[in-house]
Structure formats: structure tokens, C-alpha cells
Image (cartoon, rainbow over all chains, first blue to last red; front, top):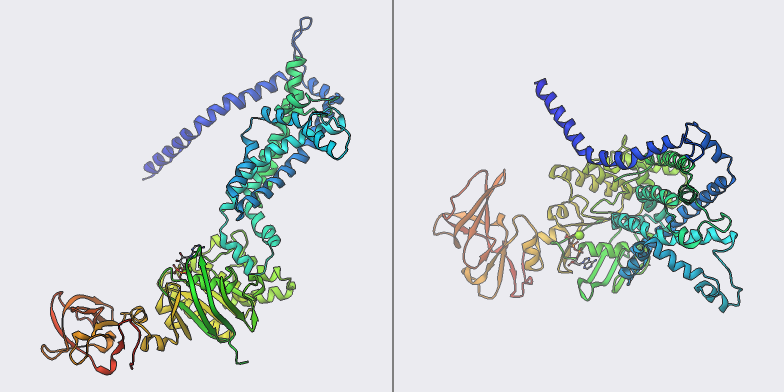
Length: 297
Length: 340
Ligand SMILES: Nc1ncnc2c1ncn2[C@@H]1O[C@H](COP(=O)(O)OP(=O)(O)OP(=O)(O)O)[C@@H](O)[C@H]1O
Ligand SMILES: [Mg+2]
């Protein structure tokens, strides 16, 4: 008897490992190993012709913490995240609610909202470059109609980061909307009717019923938006290149610069590890804290 | 009582893209009564109820509740509660939160809310389940939560759309009694949709039988059973339904009528002494009696009840008879003529 149970258990275990192994293998190869290797290389000094690479412990990290540009970039990125995450989620939700209601041109609205998502980021950035260009750009043309002076949106430190933020939101919101739209369609129509009969206003229905039921989706989108706020920098190459005077530089762009423009791989590696650590902590908080307060159907 | 009915529907019509929904629905409902909307699937029962609830707005006609014209009012302004066929419980809220949702929305003070909820849970026998989520309840318990939510607000009009259709036969029987008792104790007016005639006949003070979006007959269960206004009602109500016989097949009747007779008024007589000579098509043992289905040209649904277990072989010949005063007469259009 117990032999059979043992056999069964072993079979289950083998089955489990077999299912896990493809993902585990690929992740090890392309995520875990590079992370560890990056961490390892962040502990060594830069290899130059005069001085070969040597083990220096946390010195690279100390350098970063003493670097004012690093702190400026961190601040930029936090600001970038603090604006793009909530705003793109809010816009996505609003668009999804609208595209889910009984409007005549529903199909068209959905497609229109989704279009920015299918555009490659580089193409989107070029599009917006055209909007932002002083004098020629659409924004300036419209401004001129109202007699406003020409503004170099991308060229001045006060507006550059905002200009980048707007492109990101424009790009992300439609993508997130699709998830919200899918989630909204799983909410049965009769919940709305029951709430109506109980005397709930549309706002109450949204707040007490729809938003809680969308929580799993929101959680998922939030993690994605957070990752994007670090990951999505393609448009910086086209729009501002981090300038002017680092006003729109984000952390991943700075890492890239460090590694491939200044050829300082160890500092880039150290920064990568810091970003990884922060992302892990935030994702853990989101999953473990919010997860417990979320209703899954 | 003020004299005027509590709920009035006047020539209400609702069409979907010009197609049939419901048509010419006129109905008076007295306060404190239990009214059942009965009919086959797709006949417009739910539509009528939703029109009453304000979930649909009629294309024509007028709806009055408690003397107030609510034809175009929003559902929330009609002061009624509703039990949905699918229960429509909020899946992320606990039983307690589901039940008091409406009270919270209407800003009832906390103490009063707690008191009303305790009473509603007691009536529905749900104490101890307050903190469960709907997903953690059985079908019958969910149904009772929906019921508790409907009665907690103390609205005088409660609408129910096939609330028992998801329950098994035994549970259905007991919840049916609960609902009926609740309605009496609270003195509320209930409009109850069902396609199950036993449910309608056993619970309702007044039954509204519908077909193809139109009302066929409004009356007490006794009216529908003993005085059906047309052959549709005759064939729909009762188990087994009324048998219809072409008058030309029975001696002593001129042709051009349809006669109706219920199984309990048909009796088997020795060969040669009956008014109709039939063959047995099936025999069905029901427990206390056996229902024997009979075939005869010019009749539909003819059957006879025999006490106890008395199966008969298929194809056997039997003679049956019935008294003239138990016959219902319908004209060629199927409408009732004179009768019992
Ligand atoms: N939203 C709608 N759009 C189009 N047609 C509808 C709609 N709702 C109902 N109908 C039609 O109206 C008619 C009546 O439907 P209703 O739901 O009232 O039937 P019912 O009597 O409740 O049936 P059941 O016992 O199956 O629930 C049906 O023919 C149905 O197809
Ligand atoms: Mg229905």
C-alpha cells in the first residue's frame, strides 16, 4: 500500500519538475545567471590598460552613492514612475469603462485606443518628435493659433521630462485598457442591475463593486507599469537623449550610457543590481500585501 | 386599503428591434398579495418583471406603483427589491456586506443597519454565515442571501425572477414554503416569475399566465384550473394537463367544438359501456396513483388516473367515460364557451 503511495508521490514530483524545467532552464540561462554574473562583475574595478581589473568589494556602489548625477537620475525616475503609473492606470480604466459601455462606435473606439500599443516605441517617439518640434510641430502650430509663443518642449529642463512622460502614458494606457476591458467583460451584467435596484448610483457601483472586482487586474497592471517605468526608455534615444543637462535622464538610460558610452561596465553593473533589488522589493510588497486584500474569482 | 391597486400596468408593451417582446400587458396587483407570472420559456415573464423593476423602459403604456407614475423612473426610485434568477450576489463582499449593501447606499445609520441585518439573517436562517463569501456557500444558501438582501430594506414590493430554479427538488419545496410564509408575515407584495406551474399554483393568490408576450388569463389558481379561458391555459395548467377532445368524436355533441376534460374526471368502465374506446399508450407510476395515457383519434392528452400501482400493457383496449358536467367547452378558436 504505502509503496504505491510512495510511487505515486514520486511520479507526481517528477511530473512537477518536468513541467517546471523548461521555464526554469530558460530563466536560469537568461535571467538568473546574468544577474549573478552582473553582481559578480560589480565587485571588480574597471579594467584599463594601466590598471587591470581587481576585486574592490562595494567601492563601485560607494562611487555611485557619491555621484550627484546618479541621484538626479534616481529622482527623475521616481518622478517619472510616480506620474506615469497612476496616470496611465487611471486613463486606461476610464477608457475601458467607456469602451465597455453601450456606445454606437464601440469597435472603433477600442481600436483607436489600442493603436498606440501596436506602434513600436521608436515609431511613436518619432511621431511625438514631430508634435514637439518648435515652430513646425503640431503643438506649436496649435499654440500659434491662440497667439502663444513657440516652446521648445524637449529642449528645456523644465519641460523635457514631462514631454517624455506624456509619450509614455500615451503609449501605455491603451495597452492596459485591453486588460481592464477583458476584466470588465467578466463582471456579470446583473450585478449592475442588482446595485441599481438597491439604489446605488453609478459612482457607488463603480467604487464598491467594479473597482474591487478589478483589483487582480489592477495589481497585474501596476506591476507591469512599474517595470515599464524602469524598462521603457526607447523613446529617450529619439526625443531627448536624457538631456538637456540630464533633466530627462532615466536610470536605465544612464546604465546604458555608463556601459556603452563611457565603457564603465562595473559601475553599470552596480547600478543594474541596485535597480534589480529595488524592483524585487517593490514587486514583493505588491504581491504579498495587496494580494491578501484582493478578491479573486 | 385605499381601494386603488398597489401596482398597475396599463397596456404596457416592449419590443426588441420591432420584434415581439411583450404586448398589451395590463395588470392590477393588490397590496399584500402574491402574484405569479407563469408561462413557457420565452413568453415574456422576465421582461414584464424587468419593466416593473425599471431595468427596462416600456415602449408603450404606463406603470403605476403605490399611486405614483413610475413608467420612466430609474430602478432605484421605485422602492422595490428584487431577487434575481442568478442571485446577482456581489462576489467580493461577505454575506453580511451583501445583505446591508442597499442600506449602506441609502445611508441608514449603523445601529439600525445591524439590527435589520440580524433580523433578516434570522428570518432566512443564515446566522453564523455572516463573514462567508458567496463563493463559499451552497446554492440554497446563496439563494437565501439573495432573499435576505431583498427583505432587509423592508420595501413593500418584492420582485422575484425564478429564484428557485437552481435548487434541487427537496430544497425547492422547503424554500418555497419559507418564501410564502415570509410574504405573509411581512405583509409585502410579491411578484414572482416561474415557469413551474406547481410553484405558481401553490404559492400565488393570483396567477398571470402568459404566452408569446401576451397575457392569456389572470385569476386565482382555482380559476385557472377549473375555468381556463382557452385551450392554451387548459393544456398548460395541471399535471397531467387537460385533455382536449374534438366534439365530433363524442356521441351527443354537435361537431365544431373542442371539449376539455381532466384526468381525474375520466373513469374506466367495462368494455362497451364507455363513451370513448381507446388504446393505452403509456402507463406511469406516480406513487399513490398510476397515470395511464390513452390514444384515440380526435383527442390529445387523454389520460386517466388509477389508484395505487395498476400498470396496463401498451396497446390494451379500454373504454372510458366522463360526466357532461365535468366537461369544458371551447369554440373553434380555442376560447371558452359555457362551462362548469
Ligand atoms: N435584451 C433582449 N434583446 C432582444 N430580445 C430579448 C431581450 N430580452 C428578451 N428578449 C426576447 O423577449 C422575449 C421574452 O423574453 P423573456 O426573457 O421575458 O422570457 P421569459 O418568459 O423570462 O423566459 P424564460 O422562462 O426562459 O426565462 C424572448 O423572445 C426573448 O428572445
Ligand atoms: Mg426569464
